[in-house]
Amino acid sequence: MAEDILALIKENVIQGRVTRDDEGFDEGLVGQAGVSELAKEALAQGVSSQDIIKLGLSEGMDIVGQKFEAKKYYLPDMLASAKAVGAVMEILEPYLTRSNIKPKGKIIMATVKGDFHDIGKNIVSILLRGAGYMVKDLGNDIDPQVIVAAVREEKPQFLGLSALLTSTMLRMKDTIQALTEGGVRDKVKVIIGGVGTSEEFAQSIGADGYGADGFQAVRVVDKLNTSRKD
Amino acid sequence: MLVTKERIDIDRQQVLRSIGYGTDCKLPTRLASLVDDYVENVHNLIEPSYSCVVRDINLVQDSRVIIDGSIIFESKVIASLLEQCEKAAVFLVTIGEHLEEMAYRLVEDGLIVQATVLDAIGSVAAEGVADFVQGRVREIADDRGLVISQRFSPGCCDWDICQQRRLFWAVGGDSMGIHLTDGCLMIPRKSISGIIGIGPRDGNVENCNPCKTCDKHNCHGRRGM
Image (cartoon, rainbow over all chains, first blue to last red; front, side):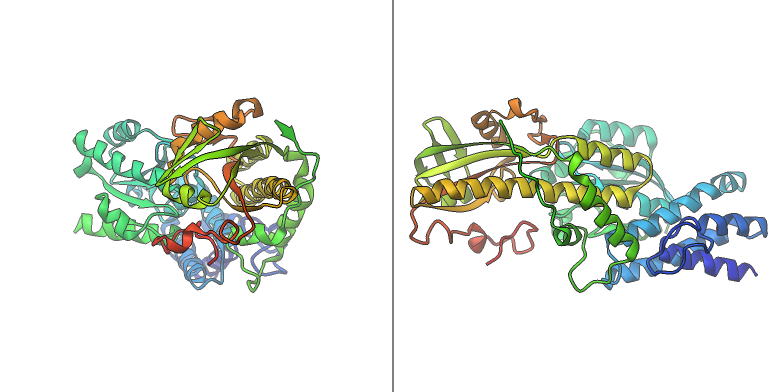
């Protein structure tokens, strides 16, 4: 019974359906329960919030990631699925707090000074939340000193920096430099992303990781998180 | 400032391309309906306006370009673009602030797919206004037996975005309700500034493509070869 409802949650994450009124990636699903109704039903049946996250949401998003990489899914499809995950996480939040379940880690996200492009950052933030991380989004056009102060105050394990323009990419280096000068560079792993950035660029400015897209960003954070705990 | 009365047609296919969908992709019905609905009804959120001046080019040397005696741009790419040109059209276009305000509201309401589609439509619309201005510059050039180059914007290639201020001053950007941030980005965001060369019909101006000699092969702004 639990397996059935978890499989349905997983399938509806893949379809990107929050409620029964939503259409899915495929047609003909309107009227069938979406993830919100299914998650509430699963909790009523006594399914644990961890199982809903692991076997419903995470497994569903893994498949969405595979479809995205295989170019069977595109940005809006991935966003619809991420939104479905976010909707369930909201439902589960009080259960997770009650069970004293900790997030996998904390990450601060920011689009660097001089850049207002935030769609990529927002997508990565949604995917990270869905993957079990606590995300604090500072917004866009963020001064390096504001980021340094946030790292001091929030004590995140990770910092995600985003930039789209070739001119503002260089502000990522300034931000990392500011972390060093502020004495907090060794307290946080820095992951960068954005259209013009690359693995080589990340290495050249002293970042710890690079995410070419949202899913890769989550994988990089997961990998750094594992090595941090080892 | 000129407010164009032209309706800016939004190319549905271009909107889909900008959010990742090629022509051979399966487009979910829900997304097709959303894009169709927005493309059909977005025009009340778009207020196209532009400013464009055509000025003499006084000097192109190495990476320095002097226009109208006082507008100085420093960029090897822009210098190579304008090398064979007699005049330059400096322009600024915007679709106004309503569309991005709506996109922000959608994000706040958690409607991120809708916001992404609307944002993409805004970008396509802004490019549409820039295309319109480019068309007008082409007509001006044609009347004089000249042709136009590709258009380039500050922030592209080696053209430092800080030089946006010089361009802004040349076209009176403030009067269009556009302002520059400390980092020289334009607010409203769906605005495009740039330069178009005007020169003789000998093939060098029309065919000049600085991307051909650029080694940034993965650049998202790389022009067709």
